[in-house]
Length: 219
Image 1 (tube, rainbow, N blue to C red):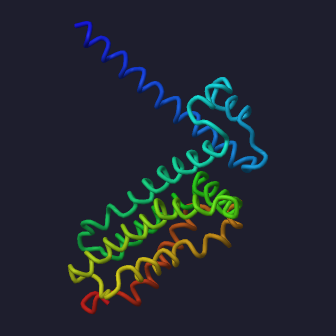
Image 2: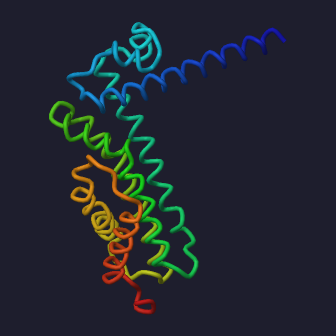
C-alpha cells in the first residue's frame, strides 16, 4: 500500500512538472510572438506564466533553449490541428469536390489563426539566427502536412476519384492554391480574414485543382 501511494505521489509530481513546463512554454511563445526574441526576457516570461524566474531556468535552462522548445511546442500544436483537416478525405463519400473544399477551408482556418500567424512571423524574423531550428520545424510541421495531404490524394487517385501521377507535386500545388492568396488578404498575417473569405478561397482552390486533376469520369 505504501508503495502504491509513493508511486502515486511520483506520478503526480511528474504530471505537475509536465503541466508547469507546458505552461511556461505557452507563456514564452506569447511573449516571443509579442516582443520578438531579442526584446524578450526570462523575467517577463516567468511573470506571464505565473512562476518565479528560477523556476523557468530549472525547467528549461537558458533563453535560447526556451525559445527553441516554445517554437517546437507551437509547431506541434499547429501541425496537429492542420492534420485533422484531412480526416474527411479518408472516406469522402460521393463528393470528392466537397471533401477537398472542406479540407481546404479547415486548413485555412488553422493557417490564419493567431498562433499560426505568430509562428510564421517568428520563423521569418529569426531564420537568420536559428537556421537549424527553422529546418527542424519545417520538417516537423510543413513537411508532415504536405506528406499527409499527398497520402490522401494518392489514395483518392487509387480509388479512381482523381487523375494524379505525382501526389507530392499535386499536394504542393493544392497547398499553394490555398495559402498563396492569404499573404495578400491577411496583410502578411497582420489581420484576420473573414471566414466567408476563407470559404471562397477554398472553393476557388478546389475548382482550379480539379480542373487539372479530376478523374475523367468525374470531370
